[in-house]
Image 1 (cartoon, rainbow, N blue to C red):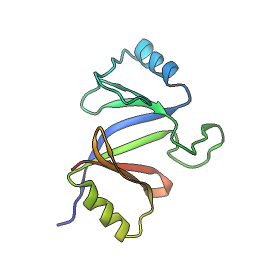
Image 2: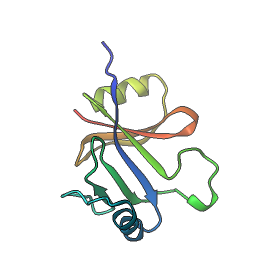
Image 3: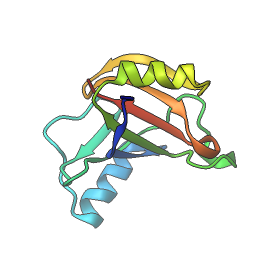
Image 4: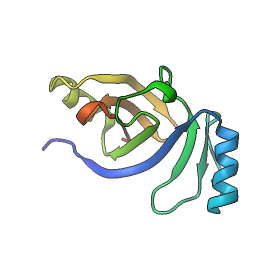
Length: 123
């Protein structure tokens, strides 16, 4: 049986100024920071799906972009990120970032529909 994803598991918006965006989320939206955040992001204690703001990924230019999804990082949980990576590679899906360890388990990014960048993690 092929490995599948369970659904959205983490939502992050890419921003130019993480400190200002975090202050906006705290001040205007009432969000509270989670106990742990990576150095390039601020994760908020949201339920059921964690939400974060993070630095721009390499190559992102929010001022001059026409590609859909730039500025948004969409992560999906899977039971086996390595197996899913192999399945997508075998199907000819473009892998955008290689498999790597993260605070959320093994992860990699791939090109989804219409050029959206999707990240899978787990297992």
